[in-house]
Image (cartoon, rainbow, N blue to C red; front, side, top):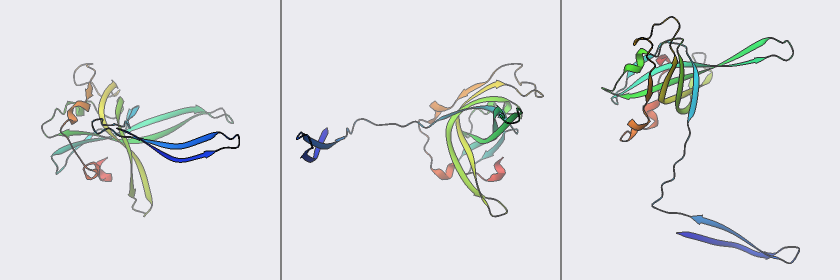
Length: 181
């Protein structure tokens, strides 16, 4: 179905007729989708922790550091700015938890997921915001230098994007406390 509405019909300075209109197009059978996803490559800053939720879901939490390196133009010094992203992998109870063996401090990971910001209040009363990532794809690029790989050099990759067919959630499912990390 296509609907066209004429808002105004007038003449401009050159005596030309100008029609001002807008178009509304709607089709009930077509579902429009949007994509808001981020890819993150960085080092894990702390071993992953596992937390069981009352909803029957399991949250695997770990922070990832993204470093931006540049050379200071004034001093010539090499500079680094680190951004920490708190990541969560969501699993159903009884799901394969093998990924936890690989999520150790110092491991280089490639993650894909949905980003969001969460505000919280510090002990001193100041409001802080943290960047979080709900991860649906995990790729271990390099294991931690001091940790031997559980499967003798075997690289691990996991894609949870197809497991979400019957999974529905609300915002409260994704709310975690500061001590999750």
